[in-house]
Image (cartoon, rainbow, N blue to C red):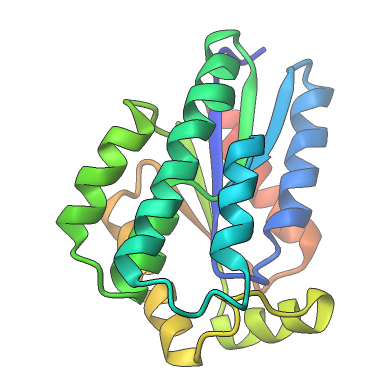
Length: 206
């Protein structure tokens, strides 16, 4: 049994996060753990409302700073209402994106000052830090194409490829800076191979 284990999954859109999160949930439940799945932006009614605002393709005039603040606001509510209470009750929380996405997308992708991103999100997460983060590492040109074919494109996914490349490089840099927490997974491999590598890391921390 795990006690308050916080797992986050990061990567560009189309990297296969949804599939691997479902497999992680099955693995952890089979080991006897109570699992909570969530996502960012979202996870609560208020945060989902903010998500719809952020991702609406019609909202093209949102400034990079406004976008970062909206993500952080959704995150603060998510931590307060879902993540912290779940961890305190001993549950395993698997979250599709967390604070690393703000560094990658708004910091590296949009060019918002990284110190500003850090300061705002320090307040938003209120001391809650993932125990382990899986970065699904795949060429964004392949990932985005795969995502758009599957579900269409939201406001962020409609950005030009150079934006997605900056985001990708941001993730790669963070994986190098925080290797103890962020585990880079080759997401170009088969679903089974990716899942096996993730499960190996999970067994180590359970």
